[in-house]
Length: 89
Image 1 (cartoon, helix red, strand yellow):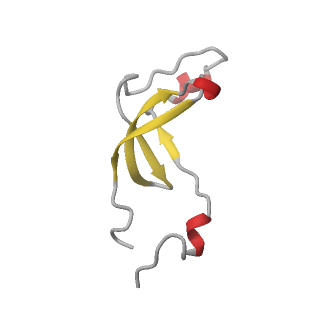
Image 2: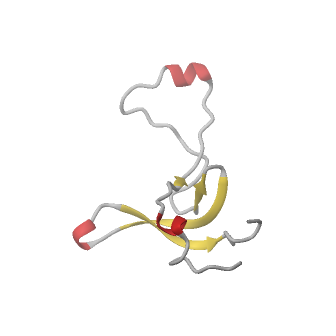
């Protein structure tokens, strides 16, 4: 039974999407020595794609961008790949 988003009561429920910009794997001893203003290198470069997750499911990839105008300085993601979220449901 295929219902449009307007008819589905769950279509209006907000969800949280996590944006992963990279990972770090410091040793515990190094982690314990971190202080304010410390730099923790990640495994990615600034221009590398970011990954979007709902829970632990990868739903898309994209590029970080900075908004302009009234929202200047705020980060956003321009999607470059989107998973088929309907498959497997």
